Length: 473
Image 1: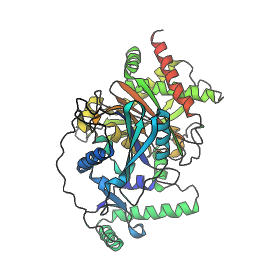
Image 2: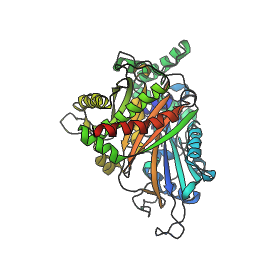
Image 3: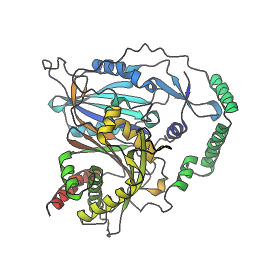
Image 4: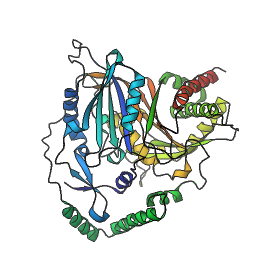
């Protein structure tokens, strides 16, 4: 079966470049059950993971399909069944020298995240990382963001998790790859489609104009970026070391925090958990900038794209499905030394936004889509990419997760971190996932531009302590 990529999927697919791999990642750290444990399972091994993923592929059918370009770019690319689909190519095995440390794991994730996906195959990879200390293992998943829309297509890490040690049953799937079309078939199909859908001829023309423009103008900006400039703020983002030319090489660091601390701060200031998270991130960014010797005034700010999962009003007053994400540009008051005033600035800014949008409660998202964060982070990156480059300094995504233990093949998930891509000229992306009483930060950074990323991760804890201290004043 041939399915044309949606305009948004096609635009996101074409954002890929050698310095900007556009895959969303997730890192799950698991505790393996003992061979004689109550679960009846031994440690999660490669064969069991392959079997589990294979059984869940019917829930994510695009994971057995690949992208084919139309000859002469006479239309959007299409999804076609991969007639040579080999699940063992996509699920891979790696190991750390035992007992592997968390630092070694994060370095491995950074290196894996730096590698682009093979565009001749379905756009995903999964790595089972063995050898972690204390009987743990990890699963790192990479999925191209063009593949996840949060509605008809979910992220695979979303569907392999279960609420108990016993994996749930999924209907058997007798999948047989359909005929893979030759180039001439794709070309004839595209010509016929253009004949019946003349509006798409304008899209094809815009694509060719964009290519011609890229040859003349070395910036290589696509047409959708130019349209985005019109829609977004006319005033550019503040100057920042976060905006620079980047390579494809990455660093990855994590921060573990307790959800209860955010609840204490929320109760003290009468705000949302999301507001508290943004205030903590703002304080951390302030400390990081000061560590670089940057002189800050009270008026200084960094502008963040903050994607939010929402319900939107329909034409008859009903609420549209909550598979949508909207983004706001939010100025983070990094120049303000007082944490209470920083908190109030952020609270007022997000309240102004909430008057125009309806937020989705965390428990609603989990009920609708299982373990939602993996898919929501992918959707958030897609939403953030609609802003013009010059209008923001960084992207901060926050996806709520369930507050009970989850399992993969009988192994309990201890921690879950998003591994977000870097958009063009963005040296840092921060993703957060709340799960089982904790809030987990995943910080993806350009390897050269953010050699001091460890300073920023330490600053998150300092900022949290500062906010908690403000609660008792």
